[in-house]
Amino acid sequence: MSKTALQTLIGTALIDSRFCEELLNGKRPALLAEFDLSEEEREVALIVETDSLQEFAVGLYERLGAC
Amino acid sequence: MLMFSRAEAGREFSDEGPQHSKTFLVECLAWGLLRAYGVAAPPVPVREMIRNALPVFERLSLLELDLGLYDAVYRPLLDGSRLIAVDLAKTHAVQRASMARELYVAFCRSPRAVELGWSCYEHPYAYGELFARCLLMPDAWVQQACIEGASVEQLAAHFQVPVQMVVRRLSELGLQAPGLVAGHANHGAEDGPGLE
Image (cartoon, rainbow over all chains, first blue to last red; front, side, top):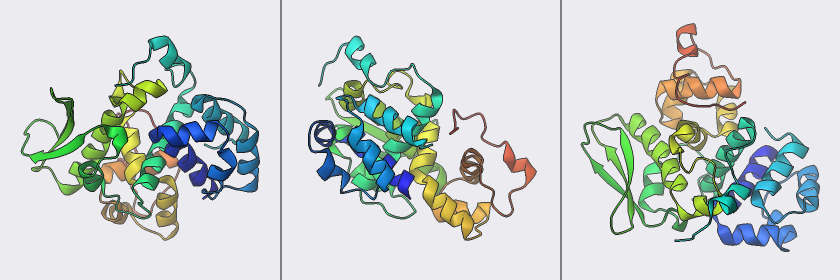
């Protein structure tokens, strides 16, 4: 279920440019709260610093071994 | 339409990089769409998703008719709108699978895909079949159905997809369902990349 939440988070950013912008620029904690992420996923998602969705997604993928 | 140079686009979801991260992103896209449409259980209403297309798809509509040549096909129109035409002569399951595939093509052709530098912009069919499987048969839902002991045929009915699609999905997820015979195992293996 956790992997699903993570992929849903990234997928939402893929299709919603405003959500994507907010995810990468300052509103990340509030947005993450909308998803059923594990503690580990939430922590990693908060520390990945980038303004690129690609880097954010790959960063999560690599650190969490999500697939 | 958003305009980005190839260099800018390449900064994001370029064709470079490992395949498994691309398949991961394709699956993410499917989950994102399921959330956006509020779909929480199968069968995924792909026909309604096209009829009520999200803004990201830019004036996408559905045309239902007897095509005779394609199961379904995506086409941009001269007025800037886009459509997915589906062949009503095909079975319900085939229509759904092909509409899901073409929905991925529609995304690949969208301004958002250009903005993201989405890797399959120029080759949308490379991952179209995979996307269709991810959208219509999400990982977690398939695993749950398998735990409940559903056969391949029952899974096909549950998700309203072709049996071959179920076989391919089970294979790429490393799952087995009761009644899966050896002859099914390699069926559909030629329809593009799978999950790793």
